[in-house]
Amino acid sequence: MLSYRHAFHAGNHADVLKHYVFSLVLDYFNQKDKPNWVVDTHAGTGMVALASDFAQKNAEFETGIVRLFNAKNLPESLDNFVKTIRSFNENNRLNFYPGSPKIAESFLRKDDKLRLFELHPSDCKLLIENFKGKGKQTKIEMQDGFVGIKACLPPPTKRAVVLIDPPYELKDDYQRVVDCIADSLKRFATGTYMIWYPLLQRPEPQQMVEKLKALNTDFLQIEISLQANNHADFGDSYGMFGSGMFVINPPWTLPKTLAETMPILRDLLAQDDAASFTLTHNIS
Image (cartoon, rainbow, N blue to C red; front, top):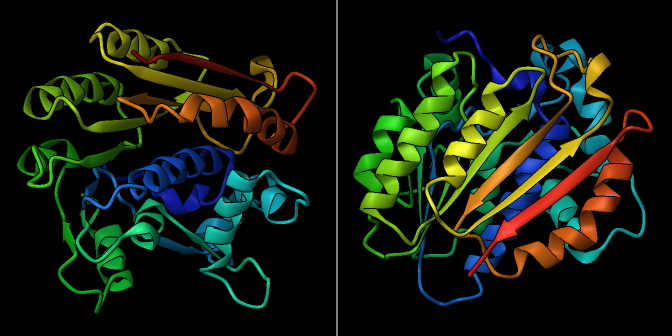
């Protein structure tokens, strides 16, 4: 199945959580001089015009990035994330939303590498266009990222951030995430792996998380619910009432930063009084 197009959901609450945490991890990696690789297994197009028909269909960005973009007096890390989004826009107007490939590119230093996988032919074509003329630092392949990641691990630098963000169109995707992580840890045990997942009125996401925890790695889990799950309606066809990030081998600074900023993010993105978040970590 290749019907999923992320542009329908560009800049929504899930993107905000995913890309904020992604940015925090990339910033942490850049605090050392040693080069690193960034691998994105389900890259999408890399950039979405918010005036496009795709983005305008449900205008999910209005209850996501727009709220952060217009917020005042944000903590430093959230403010830095908004500055990253602003860097892709002009005249203080939010016209474009960068996907994870472009956010990763904004953190690249001269010796870092970016590896992008996208299986959807139309999205991969747009991804290539969005990186045209960017040089050899970035390599794009029209391939299933669950398969393509194997050739990237271990990276020559022995330092890598991997983002895994499948569409979860098929229930098999949840098990494929677990299998991918188990295999990747055998190839490169010290990599930082970031898995985004939806919060649904179905058991598969939490079953996946429990299997990831059973791999006995250091981890951080953050979930944010934006409304009561018994009346979830964000325009998503499958009843997503929030989302989560499961980070394996997370930076030691991540729990403290998120503990300070998630209450603010919850309040900004809340759809009703039931909005909440949970933060769990096991870091040795």
